Amino acid sequence: MEYLLGVDLGTSGTKTVLFDVNGQAIASETIEYPLHQPQNGWAEQAPEDWWDAARNTIRSVIEQSGVDAADIKGLGISGQMHGLVLLDADGNVLREAILWCDGRTQDECDEITNTIGRDRLIQITANPALTGFTAGKILWVRKHEPELWAKVRHILLPKDYVRFKLTGEYASEMSDASGTNLLDVPNRCWSKEILDALNIDDNLMPRLTESSDVAGYITSEAAQVTGLVPGTPVAGGAGDNAAAAVGTGVVVEGKAFTTIGTSGVVFAHSDKVQIDPQGRVHTFCAAVPGAYTVMSCTLAAGLSLKWYRDTFCQAEIDAAKEMDTDPYILMNQQAEKSPIGANRLIFLPYLMGERSPLLDSNARGAFIGLSAIHTRKDLLRAVMEGVTYSQRQNLDVLRQMHVAPETMLACGGGAKSPFWRKMMADVFNMPVKTVKNTEGPALGAAILAGVAAGIYKDIPSACAQVIRENEPLTPGAAEHNAYERVYSVYESLYPALKGAYSELAQL
Image (cartoon, rainbow, N blue to C red; front, side, top):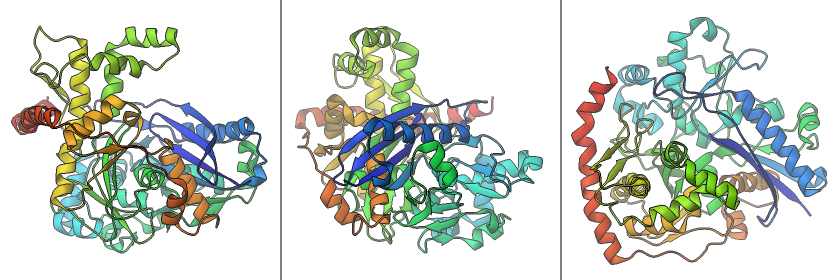
């Protein structure tokens, strides 16, 4: 039997899954690590934590499964996008990585926009300059940490650092590189025009591959700490959402998914470049060679629910531990006791600022309509509804661009909840499905490894062989109408608060 490894480097932890070639998960292991917030709106992690988690989870799944490592024919990595990893000439990490949800770089984004020109920037990179993206982080470090910057010899993205530790190769691939503001997205190469204009030495940038290309091979050093066989091929892999698209079969036109992980995404496949001139959603290269994606990213989707859990739900956490269950299951049961609209309470999920579709790093979370009648179950339902409304706003943009599907696939932690999936169906007013294999990005990474290793002919045929869908949850007319009344109020709130957010940011 032949096997494939998928490594999913997330914000909260790294999950490694061993699959057979039919997509069946054989063994799985997750290791979590901390997120550091040195200041309000900042977010950093230690790349060494990612590597420790990756090598230990790889070793663990091999030991759990009992498979011969020689039968593992390839490894692929999916990863959180946009994070800035800076290495010296010897490949040593120079500082903690600045993450996708970090909002410190608004001044640098303004500088990029003024230097390149907003229209030209979108024409080349298919996106405006955003605080989450990598280019602004590069300029911030160069400006604020010049002594450290002088030592920089390599720039990598998070998953590419782990691949470097596995293979010794400084490489990236198209889907992840699309989120840097430095890639010529239509032509799938680093933009010399932008690099020169921003005075970034192109020798600092990694070579580029497609997601399903072989980007390197397991070194003898990596083999010793992971249990893999030296020479095992490692695919280029993909950014987390591009990998999730492969893992859910969203690799042909007319298919899309919504994911509620730490961030929230609505993601549609396109065979050609489609760009929103307002920059409200992102156009990236797909993991499928030559294809593209249109996707949104709200910064605090599952993070909003996790914040609520950690801040207000100690009783559920304690009860779940005694019952040997997940506290989110008990939280879902509480939320279901509150009616649609959470008794006239709305939550704005801008805990880390907001990207799609608002593009406002100053935005912050809020409960609107809070009164003495409200209980924890109302606040909990309001959080879940607010996240869903934020996804609906982005789906509306995709509808305007004519890339929205008729049926939505759901993945990520939120997709595990039938209650939340039904909420999506009712708010989106479309059927919502899941796939039978719930490993999403890890499965997508493994499929990319299988294509790189020659196990599969190409990505679409691999997905046709591996991916199976469950029956959908369908929207109810009465429920949709009830949500629509609340959603119309939700849409009015950010414009009313935008000025206040800006003033708060100056305090």
